[in-house]
Amino acid sequence: MRPDGGPVEPAPLLLKIVVAGGFGAGKTTLVSAVSEIEPLTTEEYLTSASASVDSLNGVEAKTTTTVAIDFGRCTFTEPQPMRLLLFGTPGQERFWFTWDDLSSGAIGAIVLADTRRLQDCFPAVGYFEQLGLPFVVAVNEFDDAPHRYSPDEIRQALDLPEQVPVRLCDARRTPSAINVLITLVQHALTRARSSLASPGVRP
Amino acid sequence: METDGNRAWSQVDQQDVRPYMVTGGRTRPRHTMRLVSLLAPGSSPPADPLPPEAEQAVALCRDEPRSVAELAGHLGLPVQVTKVILSDLLDADVLSIQISETSPSRDVNALEALLVGLRKKFPDAA
Image (cartoon, rainbow over all chains, first blue to last red; front, top):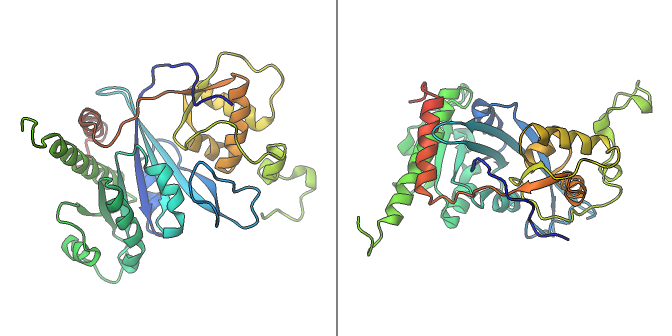
């Protein structure tokens, strides 16, 4: 066995964003609106016994469930070579093991909320809050949603802290999806700057 | 797995090959890889003809470095199975794991660069 090594080569700056949401909340749609490649869906095994990501022993276990992960990519040449990777993952609590892998080193997360099933995004909100990962809540506006809610109503319903941005979006439209990404990056940036301006450091 | 009942066994899509056939019965990759680990061509060309899945993975990485998740999606295989195949290629130096600058969420410079990049690339977004 060899460590995670190999020759060191220059690589583009790699940035990662996690998109979490309940079934049908529009994860795949949002990832495809942003991705320059057809979004790919892959499967990761889950066993009832598996606790950590790297000790996954899914294939040989008796009871396995698979979890679909959406993958999308966006490459930048300006202002420097960068590659943004988007990972869509189911928002249910039992898929937490994928969140650990996907969230490590991520710049932040987008929690997609469906107002018809708002409770579906509670676990994701709780998880990212606890992890301290910057996240935004994006409310995908479905045509057939019975009511439209204001961001403030959503914030109250999810008991979100004031600083967590809530945005309405149409995940099918690229500008709208990018808008959510920009909101997340701005939010992460604000948090990163405020942690720099801690006591002892010049504001 | 749904297959068309009218098709002969030999005409069944490659996707219908069971995962354990693709990995030769192995269930664990020998290398530690994350979903975002990037793979690039290694120092040696493949010695023997590669199995189709491995050949496809090598061809994809030749174009540009690819993440494990992306390769799994392209191959139409579960992540764990893909990792077993990629481990073989890493052992043979046909592929290498590319060390990339990781960007923790507190890296102000990286976040600023991404913000600029997003606004340049998508001027339509507000």
